[in-house]
Length: 244
Image 1: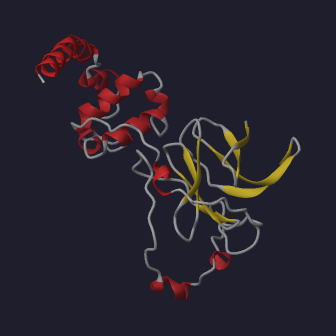
Image 2: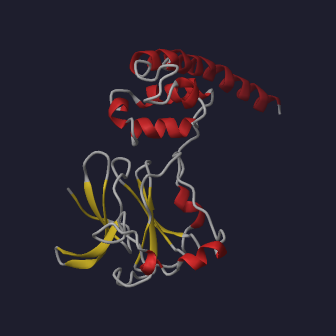
């Protein structure tokens, strides 16, 4: 028992200089914010969120915004450590380690994608080329609205908003957000078939349609991200077919 205590003490003492060195070299979040962010994020500012509004966000959402979201252009000049330091300075909390939200509720079996042109379904912003937002293909009417109840919920990792409208097509529900993740969900249970990570936050509406390339064929989800990349992702495997 004594040997264990002595050895443990030696290890702890030997680690102290390493921890102190890491803390001494950590970026100053206040200094980074003043240098790179404060010019626009001023107190009383209405065009962009002022510091008191930023303090209400989670550190994960701030890091995500600087990495994948609306502030990714500004955040590209900062190191990973500097983005984390700014988030901690603003919120007073350290960002949690990144996790994969899809792992918590994975679907147990692969499901084929049916013809996305068949009802029920909803794609793009307005569900047709005239942007009418007609819900006739969604499988319910206005009379059904008062009867709707919550069946399940799904959370986006490190994001406080989602500007992407979900797409219901081929018997699957496709959702995406500013964290750059595209998920294929079972609309009945909310379980996740797969998750694809784009280079940046997903900004466009999602469209599902047929593809045929290099001897492969099937149905794909088509969308664009905030760095001007367009993608085609296989609806069954979640694998990238092409990117432009």
